[in-house]
Length: 356
Image (cartoon, rainbow, N blue to C red; front, top):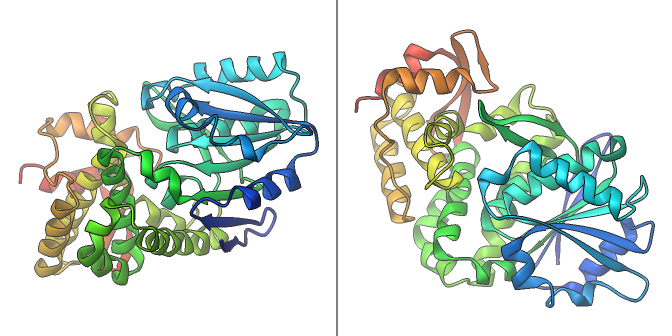
């Protein structure tokens, strides 16, 4: 099992990456569990697939308490958190209890927010089951839920005690979910490491074949970048904002589609293409790099064209972004493949590429 330390000054923890080492996973859980119950927050799909397979994690001295939510982004709401809070009370969770977030990004965000707010904060561990969560959302302590007004508008920075990444979970993912996660892998390639970009270009077929070596490499590379960034900027005051590349337009697309018939990674891919187009039009990014980005995103099975909502609709959606200040947004632009920077741009400047 590989280990990466996230060196956040007041809340350091370790990311553990392996194929399916349940013995070590059990040791990690027991290290942080102060009582005889482990509260597992998951969704209906993951519970059905893995409840029996994860029995080796438990023993007569550690009882699993399963708390399940429906599967889907539309359930990432305060109402879901309230139901979980009530269930934790009924099942006698206290300040010494430990939550295991078992699932993709939605489960991880909800479980982390519940952990941050239940009895003013209890411990939790992330065990991500999707590629998107394994390369990105399970690390960094961003927790929260969506409102009708916009995505992730209620939440907290609250770090887990550990992150356990087991790549065998990915074998039960539909291809569409692998593609969804690849959008975040491409993000890391574009903002921080062109080696990932070219590695994806030549090894993407191995990812769809669930090749363990390939998956381990891309997950480790992405998490190394994220661990380094969040250790320096836990609460997104500066460099952590780079991790939002493609997300401003991506979140706007999700909102305009009412979170229906679109995956987060699909929206981010469209947002990354848009941000790359804008970077090129502003003179930051070479045309050859822009073309290469579009070709790779297409090769991964992602769509490069953004939906044809009106400029006014996009403007209203962007104004609901957490990074918006009056008519300006901290927007992430590309300098080249592997390097990004932050620009304070007006909404009119951001939306100049909309009709292309």
